[in-house]
Amino acid sequence: MTDHENIVVSRDGRVATITLNRPKALNALNHALMTEFVAAAEELDADPEVGCIVVTGSQKAFAAGADIKEMLEQSYADVYVKDWFSAWDRFGALRTPTIAAVSGYALGGGCEVAMMCDIIVAAESAKFGQPEINLGVLPGMGGSQRLTRAVGKAKAMDLILTGRQIGAEEAERSGLVARVVPTEELLDQVGEIASGIAEKSLPAVYAAKEAVQVALESTLTEGIRFERRTFMAAFAFEDRTEGMQAFSEKRAPQFRHR
Ligand code: CAA
Image (cartoon, rainbow, N blue to C red; front, side, top):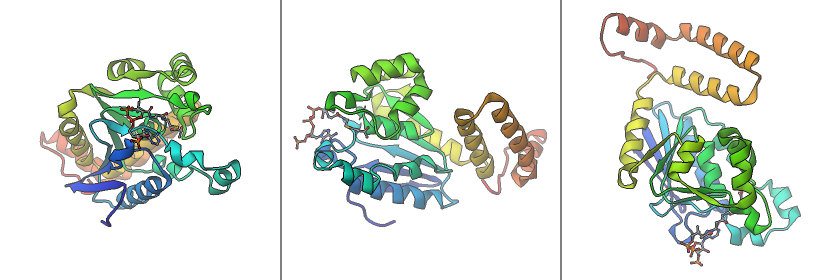
């Protein structure tokens, strides 16, 4: 993989990790970082040997938001013409499962990138928030939409209108975070979750992820219809035969399309 200035990409078997790496700015998400990050994520997504992508930062900061100093220089015409932040949509649209391993600050765009991931695992040290209101703006990378879907109106309004930060425990209680783990165990525990997912049948994983995403964007009736059809379509996967046969024979499945 090519060298990067603002991220580090590593591989361990079928698990790839993208580490945000702008320590001097607490991993603030400037344009260069976004461009590198999204290109790397798309490259990993296109590789069938990658079964799960972990996104992480440093112990102090997952990411402290979009780069405020960079934004300060931009006019409305600048951000409109450049379609500022829109490249992040491509990350949100990946088919490979993504896990955010969050330690320290996940604020503004940092919280929003975490929410673009399929699963958020928080270290006990994690702090989430949408403090854009304190800068005279509002979330701009999907925060008002994804946070509201994740935690409901009451908590989303609280966080977005006050700009306050919440800790890992409150984030888990609110439904923002899937699991909270001791800070020093974050990467090990996320690695285990990721390699577990990466060993499953890839087409089944893609289909399952898509079905959950449909739940966020459709009515219940349409979503259930989509799920049933997709479930039936899964009967065409060789891995489905293998999975059910392995269960009957009391052995571990050998997924061909992993
Ligand atoms: N943008 C640019 N630089 C940032 C940054 C950001 N979002 N967050 C931190 N930095 C920089 C600081 O300016 C500082 O740089 P210098 O040493 O050159 O001054 C360095 O990172 C370290 O930060 P602090 O000294 O502030 O560290 P701290 O431990 O005292 O505080 C913090 C940590 C509470 C996270 C604080 O840095 C902070 O409040 N950061 C801004 C958080 C924020 O408002 N995020 C939202 C951004 S807007 C957004 O994200 C829009 C959107 O929806 C997409």
